[in-house]
Structure formats: C-alpha cells, structure tokens
Length: 178
Image (cartoon, rainbow, N blue to C red; front, side, top):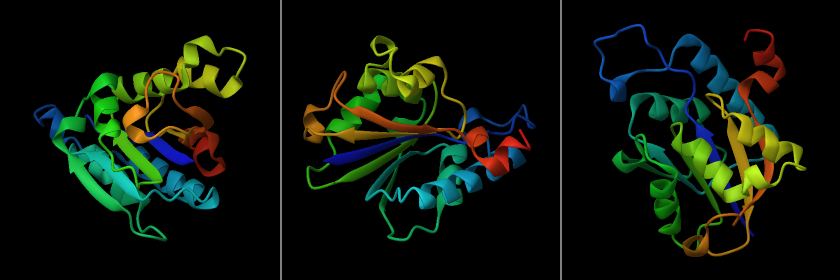
C-alpha cells in the first residue's frame, strides 16, 4: 500500500502588488496555518519519503514550516509544479520511483484540487462525506491523504482511496483565529 499526500500551499501575501506571483511569500496567517498543519501531520504520523514541491516561494515556505521531519524525506523542488494542472501533476506522480511508499506534493490551486477530485473520483462519490468535502473546495494549507494500491505509474482517475482531508481551520489552534 502506498500513501499520497496532496497539500495546497498555505495562505500567501498580496501586500506587494509589484512582486511577481512566483515570488509571493506566506502571510502571517499562512505561517500560523502551516505550523498548525505540521503539528497535525505529526499527530497523524504522516511522514512522506519524497516531497515534490512547487518552486514558488509560498510553496517552499509551506514546506519549511512543516520541518523538521522525524525522518528527513527526499525533497525535490520542481518548476513544473508551479501552477501545474491536474494532468501535469498526475504525469509527475506517475514518474515517481516504484520503491517510494509515501509521496507528498505541495502545489497550487486549481491543479491540486482538480487532482484530488480525479484521484478520488470525488464528484461521483457524493455518499462519502470526505470526498464531498474535497469536491466542494480545497482551501489554502489543506491536506488530503490517499491510499494507493497500484504502482505509481498506473495511478489515474479513481485510482486512490481518500483517507482524510484536513484544513487549517479544522484544527483547534487555527479555528479560533480564522
């Protein structure tokens, strides 16, 4: 059994309108949310072996907020994940080494949201409360955990089971300040 973690970067700052989109940092709320997600991931024992992260500053800062890890994963910043579509992310995921048991992708919407919907086939599984929630929206800093039975190169539509979906506002320390 393989594990896939899909995380949307935490809330970014729009304070400097002259800053290129790729260079936008996290804002204070984003930093707090990412720290809350770090604690949640530790409590849930979610530790990826490989982290594929967009090269955008806000995605890299989200990753930094999740550190340190109990076991340091292989981290690969990728320009191709910056604003990648679901099909582009799926191709990246399908190229992961078969020996990897747990992979995390930190990316952007709408791609990360669309990928979660495609993998879980979330629009067709309205009876599943978690899948319905994912289909509805994928807020900044949110994390979806999937269980994957097939080899990475075979993962496609409906090819993963959605295990859980956690957004920063679900966490006690963030809910009060949202």
